[in-house]
Image (cartoon, rainbow, N blue to C red):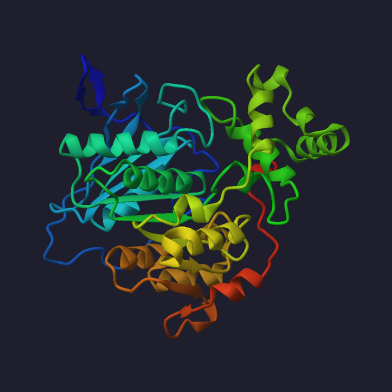
Length: 387
C-alpha cells in the first residue's frame, strides 16, 4: 500500500532481494521455525491459492512511512493477523510469512523505522514500541485485522513484538494483542552487549553493529581476520576504536557509545504487569538463553510459556540432521506455537525438546530453575562467521 494524499492504496510487493543472513526464514540457513509437516487447518476450511503479498505502507503521526508486505491467509477465514516488524528486510520473510499463512493467518511483515523501505532514522532499541502500536492501530482502523492480533518475531524482531504488546497495554486503548511469540529474544542494548556476568560480547556486537547498526541497509559480514582485528583493537585501545567514524559515519561513535553505556533492563518493572499471553522460545546454545528465561519469569510474574531445545540463535537451522528430522516429524516449532495460540496448554508451562524421545512426544516437561543453572557454549551467530 502506498501513501497518496493521506490515503492508503495497494501496490504489488517488490521482488525479493538477495537473502539477508540474519533474516528469519525457511528453509534456507538462518533462524527458522521449521515447517509443521501437519495439515494446517480443518478440511472444512476452503483454502485458496497463495498470492504475492501486497505492499502496505503506513504513515505514522510524525510523518515516518513504514513499508510492509501484507500476506493474506490461504484460507477464506483467518485464524488471526500476525505482525512481524524487522530491521532485516521484509522482502526476505516471504517463506516465514508462508509458514504462518499455511496455519491460516494473515501476516504483515514491516521494515522498522529507517531500514530498507521505511523512512526515518534507524536507532536500534529506540522507538519500536510506539511504532508497532501505531501500526497495530492502523490495521484495526482500516479493517485489516483479520481475527485477533498476534505479535511475533525472532531476535531483534522479538524485541519489536514485546515492546508493541507493552505499548498497547500502557496506552489503555481497547486494542491489545491476543498473544506474543518471542523467539530467541534480543531484549535490549545492555542485554545484547553483555553476558550475564557483565563481560562484553565483543565479537557478536562488533559483528552485528558492523552489519546492521548504522545504515538503512545491511553490510556484508566482516571476514574473520577483520573481526579478530577489531576485537583486538577494542581490547587494547578501548571500545570506541571498534567502530570508526570514517567507515560508519559521523553518528556511529555516539550510537556505539550508547550501546555500552546502556543500563541493564529491570525486566520485572518493565514487563511484570503485562497481561498479554507470552510464549518464549529459547535454545540451549543461544547467546541470550539466560535473558530469555529471565523474560519468561518476569512477564506477568511468570505466567508464560517457555520452549527450548538443543539449538542456538538460528533455531532449527542449528540442529544436526537427526534432531531436525525428529522435530519435523512432530510438527516442528510451528506446531507448538500454534498450540500455544490455540490455548491448548494452560499457562505457565515449560517444555524441552528431546530428540531421543522420538517414539513419543519429544516435548517433555522441564524446570526453569534447572535450565537457568545449565550453561552451554553458544553456537556462533552468522555475523561472526566469514562470508
